[in-house]
Structure formats: structure tokens, C-alpha cells
Length: 348
Ligand code: SAM
Ligand code: SF4
Ligand code: SF4
Image (cartoon, rainbow, N blue to C red):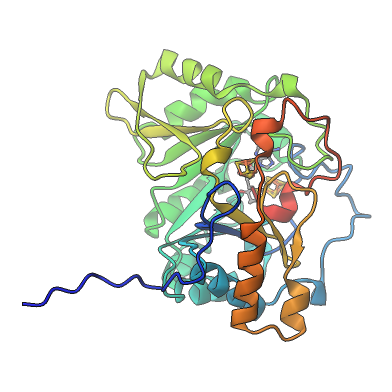
């Protein structure tokens, strides 16, 4: 009997590594720069007030354009796509985009990151459209702390309802992202751990990062991943786990009593640039090869000037081949960098 090897879903004839030997595997697509929250660590109200000009109309990539870029990225090796923002659920018709991207051969994982405030009524439709997983951001369980972290007095209950609806729709295990700021919500670490312990959801603590410039990041507000793990371990004993996949950004720990696992994302204290296989597309079609980049690459113009699939793929390949980013590894050595892209443009 003749045995044939399984064929890859997409022939990676254009695959390319960057200048540090890293392949492109992961694409984050920001579908809007708007948000209904004003988390001070991301979109502080002073900088994103009534006078702020958000993208509109023709400036935004259409779903056709996003799909064309996603297809080119997949042909180059991308397997994981995450929709983000701003708040991605503010982009009208996002379910249609989910369906289109889910239909691209070669996309093995399609996820969405949301603040969860409007997720509950949409979770089932998103799952039906082909979404696999959601990550929900939640920085505290008490309304007072959460209101400070969200910057708009948001309440916790709708977010918890969104998490429950996602789980019920089959979008779990839900990853729950908690950004930790010293003196603002670090007292909530243990309560968050206790709340999600035993639920099957995976709480991920994120070190507060110096993304963008308008959050006036201060190193003193960073609680290290190590300190976070110590706090959780003191109330719910933990042990380290191996990474689930190569290039995974979160360090994983499991509860010794079998109550599930947590993750810690230590971009500041223990950078992971060596395994960074991720590109980020802003809602206006600018591609960034690092979360801390100051400049991106315009893909909207070539698309609108009629670039076909091959030309787009070639442009992506050239951009990725020239990539040399490793900001987090250099952070302590660099002078303060100004003009970095804001998190609400590239979506974390
Ligand atoms: N609005 C959605 C949300 O909040 O989940 C998606 C976009 S938001 C920019 C993506 C993630 O980035 C969120 O989990 C958020 O907490 C995280 N984030 C934003 N600014 C951050 C910062 N300065 N440091 C660490 N994480 C940050
Ligand atoms: Fe909005 Fe998410 Fe940024 Fe908060 S972290 S302001 S929810 S985009
Ligand atoms: Fe990747 Fe840039 Fe973050 Fe390093 S600093 S892990 S290169 S996004």
C-alpha cells in the first residue's frame, strides 16, 4: 500500500524567517481604535477625550481588505489569528469578519480579545460564526477597583456574564487577562485567583507595560510576575507547568489541588522576544512587527492601488524578513523611546 504524507493545508512556499530566525505564526488584527472604556493604562481619558480623532470611514480597512491581508499572512505561515481593538465588539458586523477568517484554509486558531462588557448577548453568534476562543480582560472583582481600572466607572457583573456566556457558547476555556498596577489593583490578585480557581477558565496576570506613551508608565507601578505568583501561591499553592506551545508568551502554573491553571505574562521582568512570532495589524492597515514599535508598514495603500494576492504576500514577506525587533530585551538599555504606537491601535 502506498502511504502519502499528510499535505499542509497551505503550501508555505513563501514562508520566511525574520533576521533573528523567527517565523511568522501569529497575527493580531485590530478592527477598531474605538473603545467604550478608558483604562488609564491604555486609553487615558485625558488623551482620548471628546477632542480625540478616531479613525473613520475610508480610513478603516474594509472586511475585504482585512481578509486579503489575513490570507496573505496565512500563506506566509500564520496559523493563529486574534481579533482585537480598541474594543472589537464595537465594530459593526464583526461576526461576518469572524466567518470570513474562519473560512481561510490554514487558520488553526481564531480568537478575540474583548473587555467583555458587551459580550454576553454576542457570544453565541460569534461561536456560530466560527470563533474558537475568547480572552476577556478583567482587572478586579469589586466595582470600585474595576471602575478605576476601566476609567469609566464600568461594573463587573456584565463582564462576568460575558465570561459565562462565552463558556456556555463553547468559547472556553476563557482566558481572563488581569493587568496588575501596584497600588491600584494589586490587592485584588488573591480574590481574582480564588474566583477563577476551579472554573476551568485561565486567569492570566499581565505585568503593566510601557506600551505607547500616553499612559505615563512608571516602572514603580509594575508588580513582577514573580511577586504575583508568590501572592497566589500563598493562598492557593502552585507548581510550574511546561509551555503549551512553542513561543507561548505566558508562563504557566497549575494549582496543586487540581483547581486548574494560571498564566503570568512577564514582558517587563522576563522578556520573551526570542520566541516572538507575532505581527499586529492596526485598523487603518498599518502593520507593526513589535508591540513597542514607533513605525509601521502601510498595507492599505498597496491594497487600494490594486495590489493582488501575490504582491501583497511579497510585501509581507519583505517586511517580515527585515524584522529585527526585541524591544523588551533592550528596555533597560534604551533611552526612553517616544512616539511608540498606542495599545489601542494594535490591541495588545
Ligand atoms: N479592548 C479589549 C480588551 O481590553 O480586552 C482588547 C484590546 S486591549 C488593548 C488588549 C489587552 O491589552 C487587554 O487585556 C488589556 O488589559 C491589555 N493592555 C492594555 N494596555 C496595557 C498595558 N499598558 N500593559 C499591559 N497590558 C495592557
Ligand atoms: Fe479599551 Fe481594552 Fe484599552 Fe481598556 S484595555 S481602554 S478596554 S482597548
Ligand atoms: Fe515581540 Fe516586540 Fe514584545 Fe519582544 S518586545 S516580545 S519583539 S512584541
